[in-house]
Length: 275
Length: 170
Ligand code: FES
Ligand code: FES
Image 1 (spheres, each protein chain N blue to C red):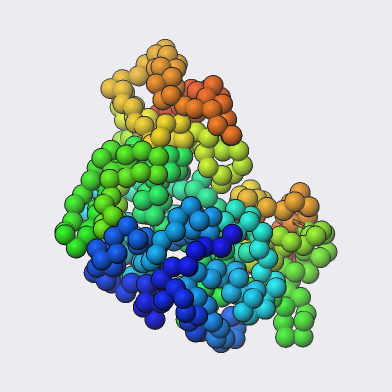
Image 2 (image 1 turned 120 degrees about the vertical axis):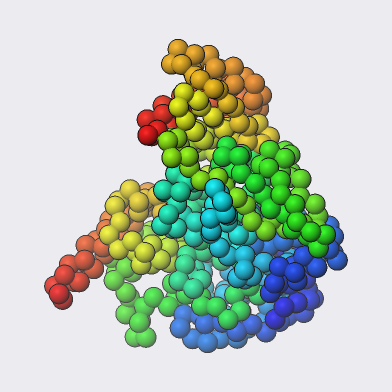
């Protein structure tokens, strides 16, 4: 499978990339790590007239603290985030989720923001973004706007990003000191797309659970308290509420069972990590 | 080299297996095809062409990546290492390649060059990996012949030998 011919622009600055997006509209696509995009271009599921490569814009390659959030620039790879020495202490959910994301070989190139832009319903980073209540910073020649995770991802591979906008960075809230975090998923083989994935945050008696791979986007549920004897009925209600579908990889029924089991385990693990 | 027209073959220079080389690529040419067809490096194998199998893995500035998910024009000025560059100038295989041979870590050999490059990156970053971490890393490669047992044995053997050769020098 070979891509259809396209023009290529290696943007040297953010402004140059934004100007190209503004000029070419729907004919242009941004290329960062390309770990989803190039596969889709190879399959000709996408046929851009112009690829704007932002992977060598150095001002987009950073991990920094912004208030109570971790801000990650658009050219930062998943491997760079995973290797960041402060990751485990700043946000253990990411440290637990990233090893599930593809493989070492794809994390070396794939970017954090690219995965969020791609918005695959079974992907790990959109689920973390939604569960942590993060934000997406969008830039265009018209200016900048910041969207909450819930407002950003609108469906399967669909987001609120306008055609002329670039995700310049994402912000992921750092861990609350007393909360516990856990991530788990079931995939047919390690590194494959998750059949179902769960991200859990336990703080005091409260629990937040994010579920990926079942609905058309990550879904987040909150309980202000969740006693042992109501966990199972709560997870069962949630499993049905997600309206998972049968597909090639799993039946809807199997997905519901995964939500119940992974959910229970993740809540238990997150609670045991509270301090 | 900021803007490249789709219908033109552009000259790109890179450092390939320790040599400075120049070749032609239109923007849509995958790095895997550039390496095979322009540079005649047939140690780069191509199977799925969408990032799933790992056969095409090469090192980009020392890091293992899928060459079927990169365009050749993206690597201008960068360093690419392939399995063709692992042996020395006399064709003497390196320790990893010899261990693969000793432990029957390949049968048809289709997956092998990609795996060698991933292991090269992996061991550079984790000189003493656990078997679990090694298997996790190998999950980025499909091998349809070996069942991975020989591959794991070969890599762990290299790890042990590199460790003992280091300690005997100190
Ligand atoms: S050919 Fe590149 S990963 Fe399969
Ligand atoms: S040796 Fe044949 S695919 Fe691995």
